[in-house]
Image (cartoon, rainbow, N blue to C red):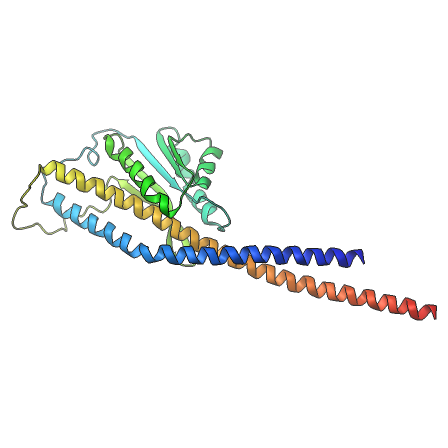
Length: 278
């Protein structure tokens, strides 16, 4: 009898876990759907900023930005974007495995920023000091984080390279870690960009306009990477919780089968004992 009670308790515990994972699955899908609806607009804005900056800078060859053309300085800023919460499968572990070797190579001479609680914990586990940390990574905090990091990058011409390690969404079921260079610019294709026949009319100093465009471009790229990482995180969490819910269903079915067999064996045993006493 005690065995049957224990099995019933196990079934109830698994059913409770199933309710939790099912609820988290629905929440993750809702968040992903909401975020994915705005991703196309953000991506389009980033592409337009890249095109505008490249076109204008191509037709202004005399302009030199110290953030792009740093003489011999080799100061590196590394930004690691993880998740705020867990329960998202291999979302964080695959990113950390992918970037671990590079991050350890940069550890002695680079500056680090951790975005997301899990990324901060990883940097601490590697004994890597970071100047800024953002443990909270949610949609309503992305603009603030992006603005502060953009200000840090563009305030002084001190970084020769700004490298971002984050997850990107290849498809709903596939999230992969990637490396993105914010500085120096990787999208520059001045050789293939058409030169405007008529020169621009600069209402403000040319350097001021181009520097403003460059700051906006850095902001757009960082915002897009943070937003994409958040979208990928919600997709990974849905997949993880969906798998957990399916496993819980299978365990409940197996446990109930074993429970019914044990209960039937107990009844048969009691009937045999009653029959033997007659």
